Amino acid sequence: MRGWLGSFIAAAIWAGSLPGAWAQGGIYTCVDAKGRRLTSDRPIIDCIDREQNELSPSGKVLRKIGPSMTAEERAAEEEKQRKALEEKARIEEEKRRDRALLSRFPDRAAHDKERNIALGVVDEVIKAALRRVSELQWQRKKLDAELEFYKGDVQQAPVNVKRQIEGNEQQVAAQKRFIANQEEEKKRINARFDEEAVRLKPLWAQHAVPTAARSASAPAPAAKK
Image (cartoon, rainbow, N blue to C red; front, side, top):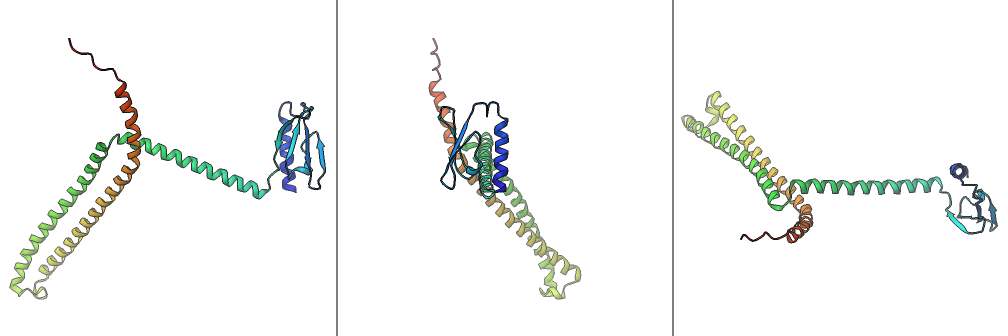
């Protein structure tokens, strides 16, 4: 009851601060928990947990005042409002992102061009790595030829030759891992552009309608005399 009383007092103070709130001679009426019909010239504390009617001096219902909420009900209402605001913010953010995306890619051709550029950059990196692998393979052939003097047995080769072979193998493995990572990057790029295309498709369609309408309404060029 203390929480309800605090809410009631706050509401009464707020209502009393409004110009003419009490000067209008409003009458409050309700039926309390015991079934009694109560009337007062201000909100009725015994009906704080139920609906009250504010009447004009002539008896006309001016408004209905809902029951004051409990702390749990207020918390639930605040949570509901918070989620509604978050959803509204999410929708506004999506609209903003869509506008930015459409501004960057006004049509499919622009989007495809950007995709090809992004993939082309990765392809050039992969080509450079493949060239490096070819160089390492050529170096390995020279090392293998040198191993022929030791019957192809690395253990019998000099320390410097062993180190060169180990270094060559490590570099080849590193380049292959790098190439694999770049292939995964191409997949990520395609996935991103595919996702964007799904979002852009309806936006392109909406954008094309007014453009087509403007073209149709444009006056035809005057014929040359």
